[in-house]
Image (tube, rainbow, N blue to C red; front, side, top):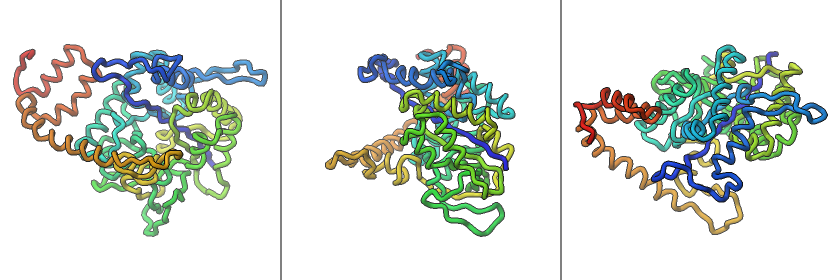
Amino acid sequence: MERYICIHGHFYQPPRENAWLEFVELQDSAYPYHDWNERISAECYAPNGMSRILDGDRNIEKITNNYAHISFNFGPTLLAWMAEKAVRAYKTVLDADKESQQRFSGHGSAIAQGYNHAILPLCNGRDKYTQVLWGIRDFEHRFGREPEGMWLPETAVDLEALDILAGFGIRFTILSPYQAKRTRKLRSRTWRDTEDARVDPSMPYEVHLPSGKRIAVFFYDGPISQAIAFEHLLDKGENLAGRLLSAFSDSRTWPQIVHIATDGETYGHHHKQGDMALAYALHHIEANNLARLTNYGEYLALHPPTHEAEIWERSAWSCSHGVDRWNSNCGCNSGGYPDWNQEWRAPLRQAIDWLRDTIAGPFETKGREIFRKPWDARNDYIQVILDRTDGNVEAFFGRHAVRKLSGE
């Protein structure tokens, strides 16, 4: 029976630039580094691009680019920071995608991400569209190709978001097993209830969308992902390899993919030298022909979905209350604070939504004095963010302005 392994790393940090100064200020808590971006880059992003595999005498046997052997996404705003402040690590990420295309039948391991890490089910349709579009354009600018997959921030999902992804030609996304509602074989009438993470993660599933489009979803292996993030599975590379291999089952009669998803910062930042455990595990599996390493794009091309799934809408991987973590006093907390609450979340969310809806009208009215279609201009503005040269800015106004504009 064919056995495949895919490890996905979601690499992201929130923008730390002072909005007025446009640079990251000194952050004492990141000592001895200047700021947390710099520290995490030194502990995780750079080491994973040049990870060491040691022999029995702890001598360096090989140096490998982990990114080229796994599936990964980087937040666009993080990549923008790396392109300026962590150039060498940034280059290893781009190089890895090219190398992975050679390893995985032409399918690059990098996938896109919504641009600002917005929780898409809490956005209106217009903002969802912009977040997805900007994420795709940023990806194309950096990796020089169209993305096959897209990571939804916090894996927060609804059918409208998936429909927008499919409309842009995105073939797949990755979700938590807790986000699967029910599954069935294609063209079957009988559904199987999969709530409480009872979905079989060894295959991709097809999700049918309101528009008639379809998109593939991979529900990652929850227990192994949890063990990597929180149960010290990265203490030894052999342990990681063994746990991944243990997920295969001889009772399955179809090609199996064992795949996990965690924050990429687990490999080196959250877990010291986690990049080396990852590198050794991948090396051990491949060198001993224990399974075939793959990425989602390659696996989907080799083994299209034979089953379909329905998802829990407005759900996410990091909150058992759907998307309430960003919307209400959901009760999720780290413990130790009996009088602590999140009552501030609902009025904050209401205020942000009110502001969004209130400024939309004036933006359209005033925007038409400058732009033929203000919302189209906003969508296209990602091209200016990516290239602020005078010629490109002029080209932007040439495409969208209602008339020749003065400097003022």
